[in-house]
Image (cartoon, rainbow, N blue to C red; front, side, top):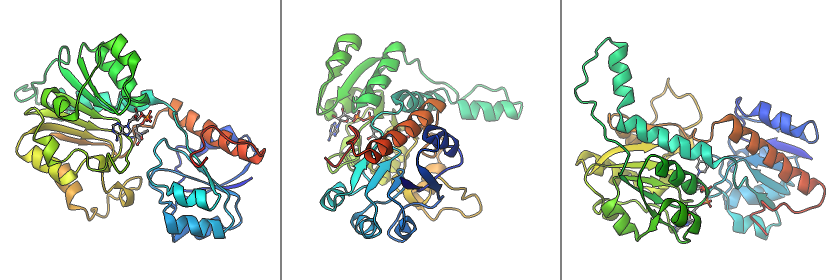
Length: 330
Ligand code: NAD
């Protein structure tokens, strides 16, 4: 098949080429998919996209006109794809349902401990030969209560890791995970109770109509003073303005995010020469108790290998007239 890989990054191209092993004809473009860039797909059978690509209603209609039959996502989340339109137009869409839940959960823990133990400030001081320890006090994770919102694949790994630190686990999900209850004493609660009791809250939900801006003023007011909030899921699960207010009035003690509500036109490019025109991001960046990474929780060798292999697997299935179990449109 002839496949156009949108939003192709230097770091992933070798993994994709290796997994492909010259089977399909892959072309790479740095550009993200949008209604304007859909034109580039003319002459291809399939495209591959990532989380910053926009496969909305109009874009998918255009892709159909240009002859695209398949879309394979190099991500778990598919909130950026209008599946209903794809289905209606008989374009098959598949994702990579699990490439490494460890990569994301471990990154969430890295954000948490960097904030809790004030590692960035500490390293800054040491770089300046300032060995004063005032203001660097953190807390033991042992016996702290961690609220895991979304206990699917990533939330389950996060639960296991936090249990290893000696934490008490509270969970919130529409489906309870019996293994987490049995092995790690996870107790499922309402969102309100989780917020009332958790010292740390980590988000591992997909973005959908129910989870959009789930973390807002109402819920923040239920949280413990000084709670640490970690979001490696999707930016729009939190209402960023409300969270900034929570940080300002010290309800939220620290915020660690790998994803940001308006990241779509900002992340994944070097913008050091042009300050992003985004006041919320500038406000977040100005706060010492906010740690932001640019959607790179997935960036481990293992995850990139699995993403590439599953992407090529999805294409192989379609090329041989078979369905892939990763299909989202069946
Ligand atoms: P998963 O499907 O295994 O788990 C999601 C969990 O959320 C499920 O248990 C589901 O029951 C629960 N859920 C769904 N809707 C809910 C709702 N309305 N209320 C309560 N619970 C709900 O997914 P996963 O692999 O654990 O990934 C979770 C999310 O993490 C993905 O959807 C993606 O957006 C994000 N993610 C981010 C990165 C990154 O690089 N930062 C990488 C991979 C995934």
